[in-house]
Length: 337
Length: 173
Image 1: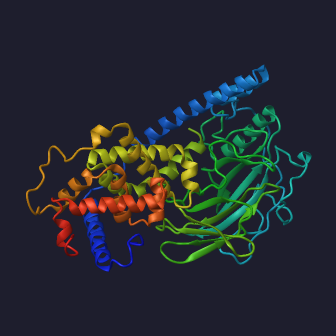
Image 2: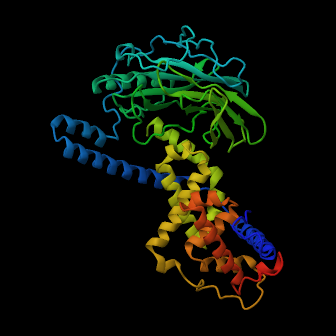
């Protein structure tokens, strides 16, 4: 414990204070350890959290609507505000429309990290996940015409094994739809893919998806185990090239768990983590010892990059260190996984 | 509930499972009783759930939620000072001499500290945070942490009931 605030000439007093600090620390420890933590009231915590979240979203929606009315006042703008009220900007509309299969040809596979454990591979995706040539991740924004909102770009971001199963983490980047109608169609296509992977998925007009916005790509993150896509994916909204973050998201996301088959809810088998494009390599140091490295990849021209690692079971509060291309440390993060 | 919400719940459960006991113990030292501690942690974790994207993206999610906890504690004192700033627990008489239950003695002495001093003492000496980490958790300057912790420590040492502080580490004066 630091005593840097104490004057150096008063050695006796410093020792006295240090002794008191040590004693207080010890006594506090004894006192705190006497508290029986008991079982975690998950249900109560989740109910309270959801209640707060609903209230916040309602308030946010009301504020946005008020702002739109105040600034614009036009009918077209009011229509946009209504979307916010209708579920935080999520897509309304039916999921049961009998559109054709949305699984289109994949555009590319991003470069892999040769020799990097847990890093992205360059092998082709299984089954309905055709692959094309290996190409570097583009950083420049292409023309809008080059981005097809109905044709996802698929990239394998990591692979590994656990309990005898071969795990692969994939992302499907669905380029931003320019209009709300196209956004609806895109949402239906994503929903149909998800339903194909998980027939138990309840029909959900919103598809559990994120906000639609003309400047936001959608990314479906999913797990393939032993060559088969698994249920329990995760759809997020990310900025398209030149776009901005939607509300309630962060520039860097801490990780998405992909765990529905061989893992448990509180102990994911694999995590996919979003990083800034400046990150050239990530080293994960396990709390229980050892480390693994991963090379983030992007899909198409997306400015958002991702990496994936197979978790070490029983090791939480690990350290993830992000490195730039020149080897400098960009960020050190204590992981929740 | 959509997949997005389900994933949030799963992650939140995983985090809460690992952080619960530590948060509860810190809250116990801040609030002074079990009921108040549970209420404090509940409020903090509900806020963490709402801002889950920020929590999971933080350099140290535990530190982020601890900061929420301390803010919640400070907010309560700002709102209801008369309810908390008591000289002693009414249902617990001050010990007349050395008390075999040092925990009760320390808890009583902690309760007498102003909230910011209590936060500084708990974070510095129980959480074992550095001065800068404590400053981040309390949303104040390092200088404030130094002064609040020093004053809190001095008051604990001056407390006539805190005999435990003189039994380990020598005389307190």
